[in-house]
Length: 336
Image (cartoon, rainbow, N blue to C red):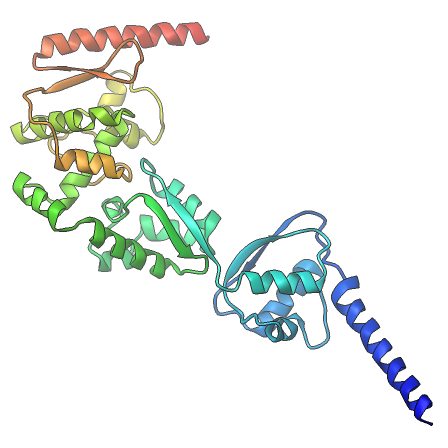
């Protein structure tokens, strides 16, 4: 009788073991290639079960969420790529590994709303439209004192370790906190000494950023723009024309120089309505520590070294500009 009971127990255990193996190891996801998994904020168990059923054809008794919770995964936002033909055991393990997921978000200088939105939406669980919509038609940003033309002054380029499930509001809260850390008493004191507002300084920095990729020239270029601005001269910054056109291409003739835009510094005196990009820390610091000189003009060198020739005299500047444009024309002819 005892042997009979032991046999029954072994049989039951064998059946349970085979069921576990079948449920957790023999069933595989339907994706044939690596496929992105996005677990969103405020999902519940039903949401998780439906998601894996619809997208990966995974069905389990009591639902995948039940077993994942038993394994230590509380539903939290995460984002990862699931290998093809993954079994439920691997899925649950991956969910557990990503339950407190953060990611290094790199915000680079020189970009505008579209590029920033693409970068954020590719790394975080934020839709492109949600972040881009806030930049071009702000509501949250207004609470921080920024709008659709001034928002680049809020963003400090850097690498930020951020929760992958952060909300749009949470993202801007983080940027505001980093902004306040960056604009410490030393930098704000320099603004005051130069009689510049934060927005004015960042706007000039954005012009410097777009004028040169030579950081060692930044303070000198900033000095030219500040000289022209304080003399009441038109800034005549080519990058503002490029921004107004919306195309990264060479500025040509009167058609470009007289383009109808508030950002056109060839027809409007003073600074443009706001920064034309997110400027780098180096460009901002260059404005705060600009080189004091009497130069009013600068032009790219015709050797395409990336450096510029600085001038006091307008006639000399015109000669430098003509030499540079002749060199550009020759290069364009070679490429045809």
